[in-house]
Length: 144
Image (tube, helix red, strand yellow):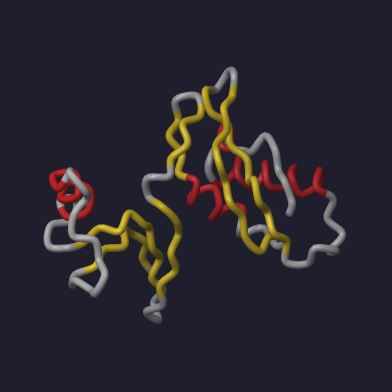
């Protein structure tokens, strides 16, 4: 069981070979971070059985009151709630913090499972506050 950056060791048909008019940027973005490998920009989790689960973009960062927070980090905690099937966390402009965040799209395992949005939001704030930090708790929760 290990997490890290998803890198590919061999070329494949159809892979990008440059960025139009900016080959240096292509090299710096995809080939320099992990020499000898193509860096996809995605995070990945590999189980002890050898299965891979993409965890999201590694560069998808929200800056909340000076704290840099990965959206995948928050989504992982939200997805551990018993009622949540999957989630997507996004940033939005915030007058005081600069940027705020919310689980914008929250799919439930059982849509009619009896959870009220206010109750679920409170439980998620508590869970995120314990697992990450109080500043990472969402201001809004939207169930879709």
